[in-house]
Image 1: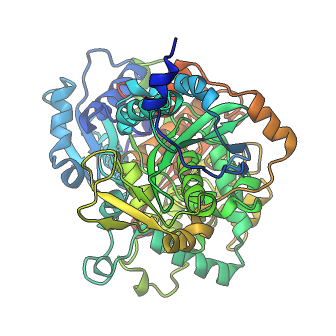
Image 2: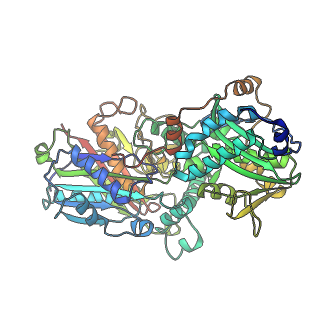
Image 3: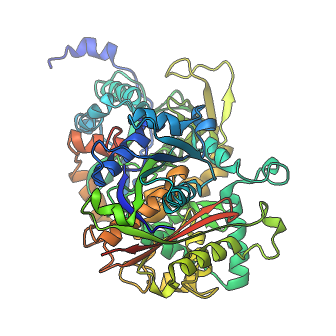
Length: 232
Length: 396
């Protein structure tokens, strides 16, 4: 795509300087090692391949989460969202989950979306925790604004982190009720909910960087939907 | 009394079945059982449906007559059986008595539950409605809570260890990966749930000392069996008939606090003894057993109270692999409730279906107990206040 860089400089959102999320590795319940690392903007086209199939899945509101995440990642790729970041979870190179968010300013972060492609292993919960870890510990923010678009999200975030309801505060994702995680709430929950070890062994991290792999659409649908109704 | 055979079995994969109603699931499982029994258009004399929660979860009652109509089995007699999580085996027992007495010749027993229609805590609350309405439920007790307290007492009295519970969890999740009907098909490892620095997050305490992976999942599902007199079995099918050689049922106090020793599951012992006595067999004669492992502790405690091991030795046996597929007494090689799932009304029927598969020798090698001749099931209602046991035998 040809760009008029003069106009592009007007359209592109100015960005704050953002600390990088240091990669970590989480040992899952089945002993698989999930590398959690910050995705590079150039990797977005591959991530979009992972998200695209989810937009067709109604179960657990994957369709709306997938569609919005797709747009947010594309917005980041095209420099249309300010201060966005994306963390990716990989097992054996394959994308098993994605989370993203952005900095509103130095003090306040916005949690965008969390999507788990591998289910039943707390991949989504681990990645959401990594996102909170990034905002509070590495971006050094005071609070993160969060909303939920699925019952699973509500249970995992609002209840497990004991988030504070923010009456009258508009979350960027729309009109749903907004909650916030404070530094205190984060550190109260950290030992219970935040997993992972650093540094990631070099061989594991290099493999993740060099092999950002996406399962085929059928596999992604099967992983997300599991048992299909109507089966005799 | 006539000998009663199971001539047909049917099940559907347990799990989340968003697209199906309770009646859909019961119908699918029933049709599978009717097909398996070679019933064709013959119909059945009576239908017993095991279900615990349709009145609460689906705001639906009279599911038995609804199923008869749905399956075009009119004018078969229809009864629903609600007996908590022991509803499935209770329904089979009622069907068994009806056939054994000579009153009916062909009976369909179907068990089903649709629990994923509500969020997890509502499902937990629904199951807790079986606790005492005055001295337990109002104080917030749940079945996981009861199991946690029971486990702590068991640890103190018998030296049960967490490693023994973990051995049950790992075994049953491994077996679930081999069972096409299982809800949870996921290997877990000691590293992932105990030893790694991340294990505490992967496997948090749920009801101390029980952890997340000590619990069965909340599931949708259904299972069904067809009963008829043994002497008429070959009129319908060439399947190897499986005979219900013995059954037992016993009740204990509603509240745990009223028991002399809360770790003593008297109803399990009594129901098992009745079943073995009726069959003229002993626990040592059993080749494969399905026990009600809603929590890992229950598989261990039931294996002792049913007579497979002495008190205090069930956990050691589990840890030593004696309850694995190739062990001394294979227990829950289906994956048990832990992996197959626990749609409460379906569970007791699903246990019997699994044992019929085993006694017909029709499972894959990875899950088949070699040359199994005698099976045992134990369906556990309340916290051991209502227990039904069956001894099943392959009939050549």
